[in-house]
Length: 163
Image (cartoon, rainbow, N blue to C red; front, side, top):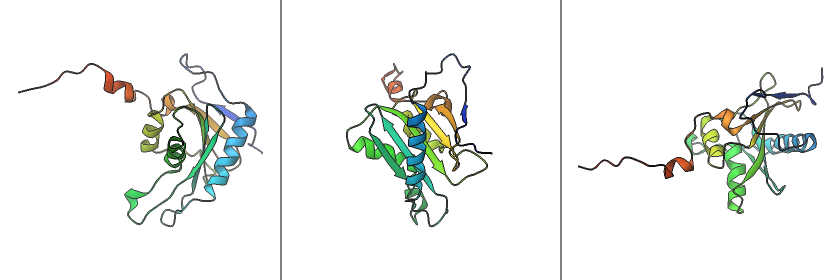
């Protein structure tokens, strides 16, 4: 059974759900680009390839792949790689990110660090978790990281403790 055109939407009954920004053509193109980016992954330790394709509000696409390091904690995930590339080019507002891996039985999901990294740039942009056959699960950053901490929380009134 070909799942390439199947769309699964998480939280579609949620009253806070943001209307989809991306067309089916954009989604398929982003998933294809994330699958292509995965091919460049440098993962000699985990052998777990991940690719990401990030769409900005003006239609520019930035791709990223995971890059591991012998000092494990210095590795960079595909999602953070793509976002960092976009930020380094002056972009701060994102529309959609598609994430791909070699997992066939489940959709790839971003790690906690990547969820927080995405959250830095808003909660209401689309995230497409995909499989190699092109099927995907659509979520928002907010759905991936509910009750999150973001830049606006640093501006909230605080109680200052002094001795």
